[in-house]
Image 1 (cartoon, rainbow, N blue to C red):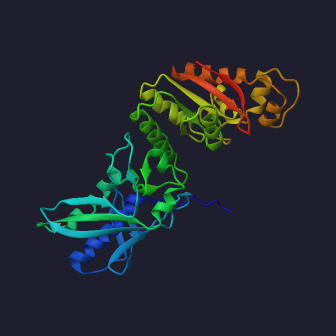
Image 2 (cartoon, rainbow, N blue to C red):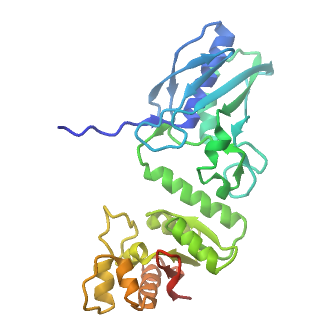
Image 3 (cartoon, rainbow, N blue to C red):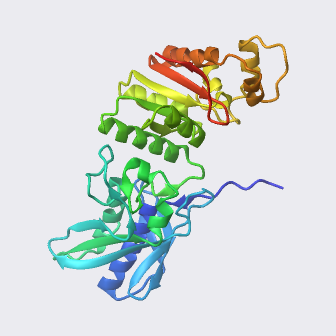
Length: 331
C-alpha cells in the first residue's frame, strides 16, 4: 500500500484571522459565511471553514497530523466597531495567555498574540473595513487556560492561557521549525533575565536531575535538537553554559551527533563501550552504568567536542535513569 504523506494544518493565528474576517464580514454585509480564504505571508491562499455560535464566529483548529495540543480547540475572534480611520486593534481574552517575562516578542503585560499572527489578522481584514471606522478584535480560546498547562508557556512566562503563534499560517507535522522557535524562546527569556548559569537538557529526566543537584537551576529543554540550541547560543555570543542528562542521549554529542534522535544517530552503547575499553557486551547504556564504569570520561568528551565545534565552554553532568549523578566534567 502506498504510504500517504502527512497532512498539514493551520496555525492558531490563521484560525484567529479566519474567525475575525467572518465576524467582520457578517457585521458589514449581514451575511454569515462558512469559509474564509486567507492570504498568507508567502502570498499563497488558505481556505478555512468557519462556524457560528449565537452572535460570533469561531474556527475549530486543525493541526493536521501534527500532535499539537490546540488541535480541535475553538478559536473565537469577536469584532467591535469603533470610531476611527481604518485601524485594527487586537487584544486577547479568556484562554489567551499574558506575558510576564522579558525576552519574548511582546511587552510584559500584553496578551501573547505574536507579531506575525497579528499581521496576518490585519492583512486579511483591511479590505472589508469601512473607510470611516476602526475595529477592536478580541481573540479567545475555549479551554485555553487548561490546555496551556500542557505546554511550555509557564516556563516562558506566559500565564493564564495559550499563545497565538505561527510564522507562516501553516502547521507542518512534527515541524522542526516549531521546536526550534520554542528552544530559542526559552533561551531568550533566560538571557533577558540575565541568567548567568543555565543547563541544556533533553527533557524532564535531565531537568529533574540537575535541579536536584543545584537548587533553582535554570534549564532549557531541547529534546533531540542540540544543534538548534547550540547554533542559537553561538549566534548570541554565549561562551559558557552547562549540559545535563542521560548519557544514552548525550554521549551521541561526543561522536558529533547534535541531533540525537534515534533515526539520525546510532545508539550510544557501542561508542561508550569502546571509549571506556570495556570488554563485555552491553545491550543498553543503563546496563553499562550499572557495571560501575567511569562516566567522567564521557562527560569530558562531550564537553570538549562542543568546545571544538562551537568554541563554547560547557560543563557536563550525566545521570542514570534514577536521576543519580554518574559522571561530570566542569569548566
